Amino acid sequence: MNDIVITNVDIVFTDHTISSGSVRIREGKIAEVSTGALETGGTVVDGKGRVMVPGFIDVHIHGAAGHDVMDAVPEALYGMSAQLPKEGTTSFLATTMTQSRDNITQALRNAGTFKESQKCGDGAEMLGIHLEGPFISEKKAGAQHPDHIIKPSVDLFHEWQQESRGHIKLVTVAPETEGAAAFIEEVSRTGVVCSLGHSDARFDQVTEAVEKGARHVTHLYNQMSGLHHREPGLVGAAFMNDRLLVEMIVDHIHVHPDAVKLAYQNIGSGRSVLITDAMRAKCLPPGTYDLGGQDVFVENNEARLADGTLAGSILTLEEAAKKMKQHAGLSWQELVSITSWNAAVQLGVEDRKGSIEQGKDADLVLLDEQGNVTLTICRGKISYNAEEVQ
Image (cartoon, rainbow, N blue to C red; front, side, top):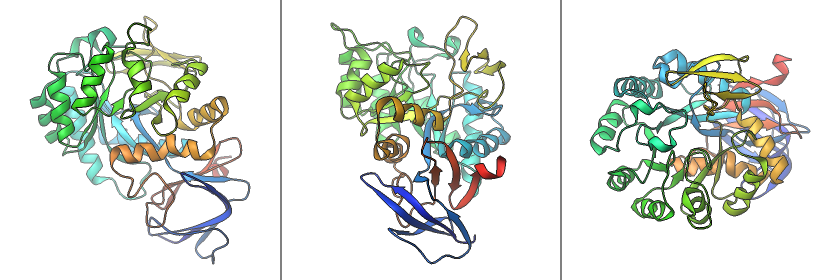
């Protein structure tokens, strides 16, 4: 790869921003970060009027551009990887659905193979797999197919982890279900992050799950026990327990804007992470699409089952970040935390992702003052340039 030098750009770190700085990219890595100019060579990008942030990391995404993880074919993951840089996403977890045991096995097998064959700079990097279901509550199934919900099984998890070649990184589980406590303890022991979601758990059940090792919350507010003054539920526990990293879908459809603001005021930039929970209809026109074997009707920027249940989203992380920054008044530093750094730490890849530092992967995004993505670099390769698609 030729060097890429980005000059005259405001560079956002996790705790400060420098104006008119420069970054040199060499062989897929950040080779130099300077507060001023750098000697140019190779490809030069003038970043005047733009802000550089670390590439976004989406830990909860099912599909995009007509593709879905449950398609269980390499083309689906290649298609998602090619599409995501357009919204500033440079890394993601391929997220499964509650389907039959065989279908999940096939999806995990395909994702594990893709993970080990994906080349450096070949679109957004798949960091691993988010197993969303089938170990959830029937009372909070949402768009997860209720016929395939089962009790948490350590043996089945280990079988699936082997099928995925060890690439399951995050598992959503309802902590109130039979066997969940032992499941959370064992899965956490293996280094996989247990996320609490699709759950009707009481506050004390969530507290026990955290003691067993749970460290994450799947799409706050949606399909979980709400905050009540006599039973704080999973929402209340997410607000109060500082060991939990909390996902939010900020499309202003899944969660009211002021409920987002309320959550952020309680949780803060250190424990929040933006996700899309997007399905295959993202980037496509309104119509009828499939999600987990169920028809999803997409119109007015909403994706719903026939009964009106929200079924994932067609949200981009670019749009979520803009909404979050504008409505909650975030600084650029806070935005970096909730779109990149927190996710990198949670997944144990902060040594190469999540911040702009020498030696880390060159996963970088240039934004204009309104937060629109103008350029995305994935591991040293320009994967999206807005000027080329005008």
